[in-house]
Image 1 (cartoon, rainbow, N blue to C red):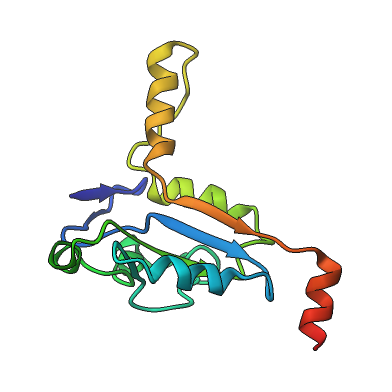
Image 2 (cartoon, rainbow, N blue to C red):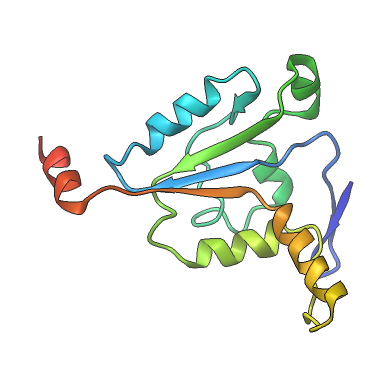
Length: 149
């Protein structure tokens, strides 16, 4: 599997898996707990490295670098795992993360969406293939009190 960028640079991504979910939230909202619950399931492997920050602080690094922070296809096949993902607190206040995620991880990006059914289906297929974003929120007053304690 190869991925081309707009600057015509091609990158080989064979053997690497992309995340199936990204949990975003704030401190003291349960983001890490939800991640631990999900990765505690037999069919979900945790990321190899935590706090990857690819869509905020490591945007200059390659997609191959990002995928290398997750289990390989061999580990998926060896364990019967279906999914991996990451959880980060820093993504919540940055709406640009979603735009960058779509640009970098979408296998196909239609330049212009046509109004016909084929264009709409291509867009839906592109969106369906992206990692699921799971926001975790909490009442801000309760969160501040919890953080203070």
